[in-house]
Image (cartoon, rainbow, N blue to C red):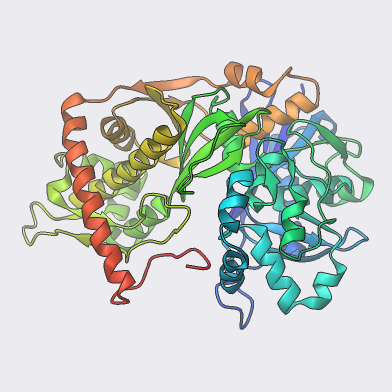
Length: 520
C-alpha cells in the first residue's frame, strides 16, 4: 500500500498528515507552536526556526507511528503553510532570520515605500496582486535598516512551507502560490519580479528557483531521515500556500469555481484567469493558484473562527458543561440553541471584521450593537447566531466585490474548513449568499490538496485538477431559502451603513481598531 504525506504549517500549529492514495486520512501528528514578539519590536511576530523544526520532526514521527506503516511506504512528501511568513538564509543555506505571517513590524517601511514615488503601490499591485502591508519588501527594508549584519548575509529568501521542504531535501526553492504573497512576483508569468526589489533598494539576487506545485525538487536526505524517520530517498514535492492547496482539496480547480474556507480567518476565493485585469481600487487580493494558468481573487474575513472561540470561552461556560455531559461539541449545542432564533437575531449587529478593503485595510472596534435588555431576545443563543450571520454577510460582500470586478460568477459555493461542520452555519451561508452550498466529506482541504500534489509528483495521479475531481466527494448540498435571502439582503445593507459609522469612531481615535494593516 502506498501513502502520501502533507506537512501543514499553520499559524497556531503544525501537522503531519498521512493519506492513502484514495484520499483517506490515515493518521495525523499535530502540535501547537507559538510565534513570539521580539523584545522592543512593536507588532513583531518572529518565527523560531530552530525550535519549530524540532516540533515539525516530532509531528512527522508521530504521524508515521500512528499510521503503523513502514516509512518506505510513503511515496512522497510535500508541505503547505501560512502565507506571507518568510525565512532568510545565508550562502551556506542556514536560516538567519524568520517571521510568521501577520508580523507587522514594518509599518514605517510600508509608509516609506508608498512615498517613494507616486503610484508605486498601484504599479506593483498590477503585477503581483498584493499591496505592501503584508508583503516581503517592507520587511526586507526593515532588516536592512535595523539588522544590517543579517541583511548583508542574505543569500536566499523562501516561504515557510519551502523551508520545511528545504530541511527535508537540502534544496531551497519556492512555488507561485505561496511566493506570490510576497508581492515580489508576477501573476501572469508565475516568476519572481526581482525588478521591484531593485527599484526599492533591496537585493535582487536572493530569489530561489520557482517550481510548480507537484514538481519533484529533491529527496529526503540522510540527515532529515535520521531526524524525522522518513525514509532516505523519499520524493520531496513542491507544495504551496494553504488556501490555494485547500482550494484544490475542495475541488475548486477550474475558472469560475468559488469556495469559502472557514477557519480562524475566512477566505472567499474565486478562480480567474492568470491574465485578468486587476481592480484599480486594490480592494481585492489576487494570488497565483496551485493550478498553472489560474489566479484566485480572494476576500478575507478577519478572525471569524477566533471570534467564535472567544465567545464560547468567555460567555458559554454553562453550555460547555452541558455539552460535555451530553457528549457533544459545544458548538453543536450552541447551534441547536441558535436554530430557535429567527433570521436577523432580533437586530443584534456584531462589529468585528470589515469587508475586505485591501488597499486601506483596517477594522472598527470589536463590539455588539443594538443589544436589548429583554433576556428572551438578547441572550447566548441570539448573540451566537448573530456571529454566524455576520461571518456570512461579510463573506457575501467580499464575493460580490470579486464578481463585480472579474465578471465571473457562479450559482454555487464550496464550503470547507472547520466552520463547514456547522449545519446551521452552512444553511445561513446559503441563505445569505443565495447560492447552493456544497459540503465535502473531507473538510481538511489543505492537507488533502497537499496529498494531491504529492501524488502527482510521485506519479500516482496524472494532474492536480483531474485527481481533485476524483478525490473530492460531497457530503451534502444545501439550497438557499429565498425568503431568508431577501431578509438578509436588507440586513446586509444596514450592517454596511452601521460599520461605516463605527469606523469613524476609530478615525477620531475614540475607539481602538481591532486590527490595522502596517502603514495605515
